[in-house]
Image (cartoon, rainbow, N blue to C red):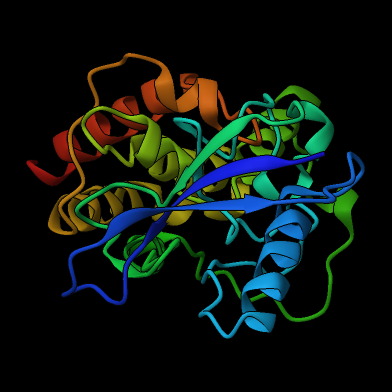
Length: 249
């Protein structure tokens, strides 16, 4: 398989970037998208050219660092799939593929396809924790949690913080990410003690980082590789209104 690639190249955050055209040959349909980029980088290195910079770590759809925009879709055309899990059989021989970094003010480009997503870390550090003394692992049955609640918390906890929701949103909103973190902890009894303070702090941190507002288009849910539901945004809004009312009294 041969592909015509149009890839964003940018030296650093202060440089002006542009698209560059490449062709990669001998692409196996069983390769992952990142393995295809590895093949391209090997070819560029042999030619004495600078390879494409892109983020990756686990390559198992867990860490979220591989996020990039492929033909206009964060993580590419396959629904519910991270870039590292996207296989080349989803593309056709000779197809043109445009690859660019996540586009958001809060995610400045560091180099080529690599963006600084530390804004997510700062939002999570603002309130994404519990102060319960952990110690050794407690007996699970000592803290009864209804299965429906546990399942909902688990679905929210699947968020890998990749930033696809921000890139998909026309407002570059981080509401789905923050809502997933708020839901995960507020649903579980261990996180109940800080729930009001948590949501206030995390929403403030999100605003301070320069993320846009949510206008409920649903693009974030559609592009999320873990299929996080926008129902969590509604829950976070309720949590925030409740927490605001408490702080005013």
